[in-house]
Image (cartoon, rainbow, N blue to C red; front, side, top):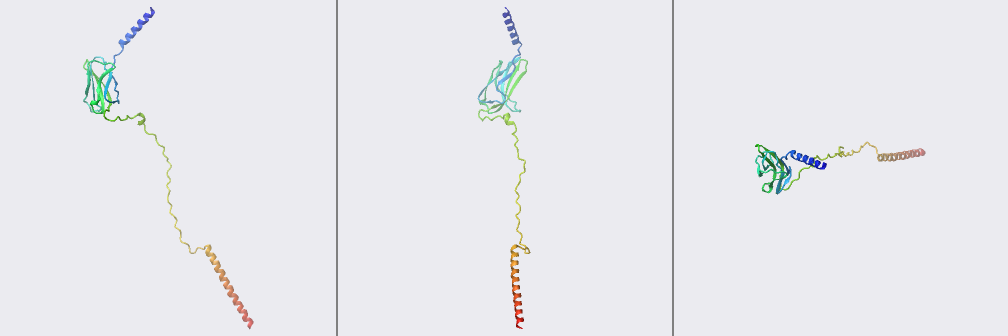
Length: 204
């Protein structure tokens, strides 16, 4: 008996939670901003909104001045976690686009959801998106602050002319030999003079 009561209370609580759960809102699961699109793309999301009347899926160029929207699909039935539309991107030129899911309400108002930065690349190469690592500045390189010493060519000294008054060892030797020879000649002459003088005295 107690088990049945517990099961009844559990079912009651689950039913209350389900009834009190807020309805799903407008959202798009795929594609996501910045995604590359090629070929036929399913647009998946939900349009379950209070007062739902109808919805449209359209696209335009991803520019600030772009105000013209091109219809992809429209429907009077709401979609929850399902396929909202099918977008054949091969029929448009490659470029960057924005996608809009617009829900029209019974009170005449509307709710819009825009997915921007969609890159259609059917006929052009897919460029690499910058990563967080590539955006970081490069590491600073250590530089040698020691000033470079440049070799300076000093002027080559020019030899000075010889000083005529300078006495060299060779000149001193020549002077000494000349003086000895002159002294020898003088002694010889003086000796001859004395010998001649003595010989004259003897003759007298």
